[in-house]
Image (tube, rainbow, N blue to C red; front, side, top):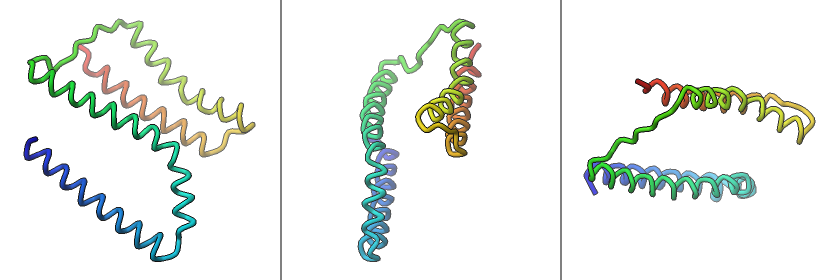
Length: 136
């Protein structure tokens, strides 16, 4: 491990200690334990995806380090204009799909659903621009 990795690990460790101590002081010492249980119940589904993300990130990081040591740090993709068109189509249809699912399951489209659709669109659009601005 390099010095940079040790510094990042140290910052993460200090952040986690501060976060845990704030939680202990607020939820346990200040008698807000029921709120703590509600937060845990709400975050439980996210923990599944966070675990998958952490495993995938660790494997990708190991692969990237190994590839850079072998001198093959870049990935070359050959995409056609048809692929770019499909990508744009998915980016622009995603907000409508989110609103449609909300309408089908709840019978209405709330402002929260619209905010989720806009957030998904902005993230996907930024990613699309990042990827395709690299084209030569």
